[in-house]
Length: 600
Image (tube, rainbow, N blue to C red):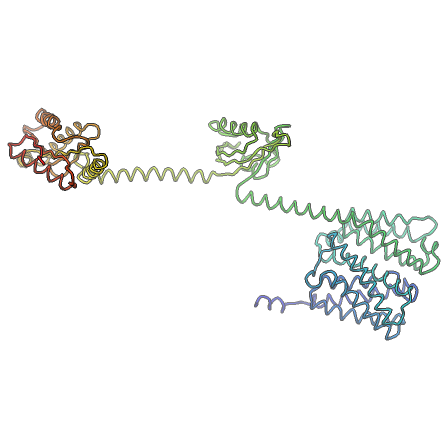
């Protein structure tokens, strides 16, 4: 609400001055019309003041409409008293002048249609009907209030008031509402057009020797073609003004052929109506064309802005004549000059040699079967820069199904491609790091074989699989005999080498789905899926023999004790490990370098 108050409080002189200006214009036009173009009973041939008031009502808001009505009421009283009308007649004329304007305003929609554009045909037709009705009503009101109900008075009042509205109101509104119309009327071209219209009007109404009433028709056509709707309205005002002045002065064909004033007025009014009706269709078509062109230009501008912002362009290829149309952004993406229009083959050649055949196959398939297409590829600009593009489009077919054109969009996705490359590199790096971390977490640092955590996890998975499939599962717990003596006699360095060499032999003995790992110190665990404990004796003997036959760096004798256990029903991991540990204990008690199988 604060903003509204600020705006209202900042109204300058123009806000209050325009209603007064309308009132002065009304008074001047009334003086001129009453003084120079008087007809029967002091009624002017054309009453432009009525058009001025209606234009103000249709243009202004409520407050300035009221101010304008006050100024025009004062102007009407002054003009009619100056023309010699009695006081009561003047009051009647003034009331009629005000009512006619407000009646047109109401018929045009009232407050809901303020600033209605008369440049639209339907609005203009509605305005014409409203002007005729208001003119008739005004004539009747003026006749009743002034006590003059003669046919001559009523028809003269109605025609002059109606013509005034039809001629003057559009000109004012075109200038006030249409910026382009305003620019047209203040241009150098408008000056020359006005001069041509004035010269042709003077030639038609300034002499009577040669009938040249067709010249104003030419003038209207020239003004309409040159300046559009605003030009047609302005030309009609010029013709009406000069025609009225010259006819009132007794020159021109109207005065010669119609000696009676009332007949002159009637003919001239009909002439102006004919000019108005004949010029408006062309004027409306030109105005609509101008609006359409402006809308198309604005749409094209917005499209170009959107394409430039989004880095998306478009193209259209016609295989029938090998022609092409490119948007500016599409040319920029591909590295072409703005005035270039490369054809389809030129575009193919622009693609990276590794992508060219694939892109061509997409386009050929779309052209052959009228299918949509979408692909990503790389193009090499003339500068050598590689650009990643996303291209999507479809084939345009005629009524017979023949492809007549290909339309596509092209998007610069180089940033996205670079982002994806970086993400892929980051993902690969993260996977490597995760694998390294996992390897560190699951690998024994001394031997490189699975550590206790990893081998026990493998055992848990094998137990779950055994429970599901019903297949047997066995484990072997292995311990290096007298390992403490090795460390004591030869040092921990030799002990570590022994552990590593034993681990290498055990890993080499693992077959198929077998897994082996170090569970601590000199102890190892072998997991044998789908193997029964009794069937592992041969494997255990083979392992012990390899240990005995191994070449040890130090003069030490290394042997292994092995305890084997098979998973029994109802056992968990701890039960199985305890069983294997008991079997290992039995093997050591039997003299070491032995293996023992737990008996359930």
